[in-house]
Amino acid sequence: MAYVSQEDKKKLAPEIKKVLSKYGMKGSISIRHHSTLVVTIQSGAIDFKEFGTWGQGGSDDGYIQVNTYHIESHYSGKAEKFLTELLAAMKGPNYFCDDDAMTDYFHRSHYTDINIGKWNKPYFMQKAAKKVSKKVVKASKNSRAFNGWTPEVIDGSKGKMTYIKMPETATISDASEQVARMTAKEQDKFVEDIVSRYPNLADTLMTKLGYGLLEQEGE
Image (cartoon, rainbow, N blue to C red; front, side):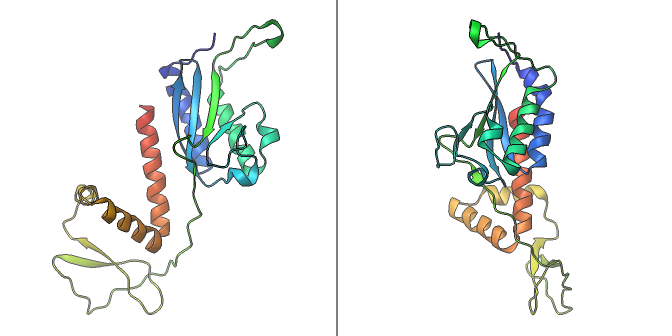
């Protein structure tokens, strides 16, 4: 009889996370009915519509229930490689399957399910971050500090001086609390500003937040 425990999930999680990280994907690991290990892909850089069909039902709403028995025939390219490696990591070194449909005998270590997105939360396709200038712009000698805020040198563009304004005594906790206190509208503007002005930073933050949540769910 198939069975997978929380301890089994904990042992398999590191290799699963390695595959997710290798392909720039974010997802969660869970157990269903004590018998099935489930990985749900939340977002990533792979366009599954380009490399295969949208799931068993042919849906185009960002939700796929991957048929793990036919990955090679349903997907190609990067999507096929990712799903194949992910499935192998989910099975792990102790996986076995002695099922015999002809005699109606089913016995395996555990079942595996891969979902791309959820029925109520579609898979989010991440676009590659735009390249920005690496040129360092020196702050002008005439630059003035104001209200305790000091301009810091960052990437810039022709004819313009760009600054990050940070209080000299600011801490990470202060910054986190300021974001937490924002209204929904202010948070939208904050995110829009980071994405448009600092796309590489936005991509880095999204990756770190995604894996931070994944590790929390795995605890």
